[in-house]
Length: 353
Image (tube, rainbow, N blue to C red; front, side, top):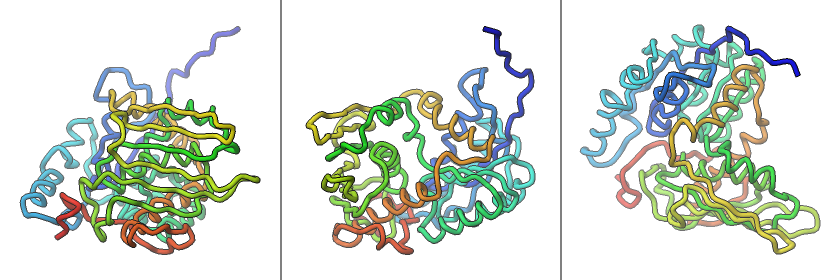
């Protein structure tokens, strides 16, 4: 067999990082994309431009807590300047519009302003990544997707957990038409991002068709997203598949096992598919498969997920939050409407300012 040769020169994509707010992972993916760990970098993309907003509006609570978080963003390790120095990013932008002409793709990380932040890149037909959650509500997400379709720009979304190797093995093995029920658990710190870390693999594993969502254990905190909430669970009821009754499933938010993610799927023939996924190891390995998928989207400008995928995942997350705020009642996905996710971070769920 003739030996395949790698091209001597490959285009390295310039990536714009847009947002460093409290719901953005603060730039954690950059350390892997720009590879601060070793000399060799397996990715053909680099974050070359970075921008962060004024996040004083995103925090509430005790003066000590707010000052700590705002100082951390402005001058601390989560600031644009600190990330640029740590990861060798040459361009710190005062305005995210300034980078639109100079990058090949953009990572939109502040979901509470997702449409505004994505718009200059979409207008140029450039692919974007939307950090989970993708938008503050469904209408804003639809505006982004409409804009992307108009200008031929790919939109990719989600959490790194969905592409982790152990999860991909289960996706290949699962018998979706035979599922009777499931139980899953995920590590949890705050709702908007960590609930996604559990829901994204569940969506890929179980499939679409959620009918109602109920969140038990937390009261929703009415517009705030605390750094810690009580151990809670999201109950998912699906539309019937074939002649079987509705699939019933539960995702526990924290508190079940020491593993970061844990899955058990029960089939109608009484067999079980189970396993764990641990995302607490080396960051470059934890993020690897997700970033390879993201790079494919950026190179081809073709998404690996559909518009329906993106909207369905967002609706499930919002329905869970709506349920928490409405006495933990089951919420149908068609009830979500323009209901908004929480966009202000506080320290404790039971000390709402």
